[in-house]
Structures are given as C-alpha cells and as structure tokens.
Amino acid sequence: MFFFQELLMKDVCDYTDKINDEEYYGYMCDSSSEFFMEKINNNFPDLIFEHKDLEEKFIFTKNDLFIYNMCNKSDPYLYFLILFPRLKEEYHVMSWVMGVPFLKKYILSFNFEIKMIGYYKK
Image 1 (cartoon, rainbow, N blue to C red):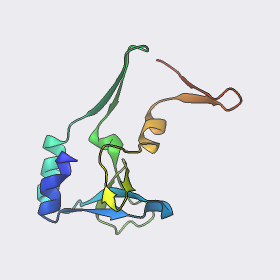
Image 2: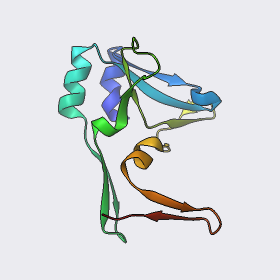
Image 3: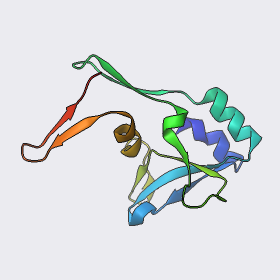
C-alpha cells in the first residue's frame, strides 16, 4: 500500500506474515515514532466504499483501521486491521481482507439458511 512505502523504508513500520496460521500479511508500525504518528495523523486517508444501490458510503478512518495489541500493553506497535493474502510466495496488494473494522462499525444481519446478508441503514 502506498501509505506504508516510506514508513517501511525508514524501518518505522514492518509487515508480519503467517497471521493466524494463514498466508496473510499485515502492517505494524511503531507508535513511539514521531514520524509515524505525524504521518498517520496528517496523511492517512479515509477509506470509503460506496454502494450505489443502497445510496450509502461506508467510511473507515485511521481510528477504525489501526489498533494496539490489547493482550500485551507493553507492545508499542499499532496494527493495521486490513490483511493481504500472500499468493505464490509474493505479496499481492490487489486482494485484501477487512472483517473486524466493518463488522464493528456497521450493523449487519446474517441469514445462514438463505445465504443472505442484510444491512441496517440508519
């Protein structure tokens, strides 16, 4: 992802693979770095998905997409909550997975019998 390129080159962020024993990788960034905190606070764009039929925009900010490790309070890293599948020994940024941020922010219903997902529009 373009946002992370300079951060990776400056060793402020890194990527981790083998998340949950799956072939995914994700970004983690040192929150004690002033450079990173300035960049995330001033340059991280909102991620916006527009659903034309619903006439709805699903908007995710840096606060939706980065999280501290709640299991280890001494961990200084912020973790980016979008994961990327690792395909054929290469990292493929055209595909990605975003579950928790979407489900945490927007109310959905699931009907497993008819394989339908519903969205509760405000």
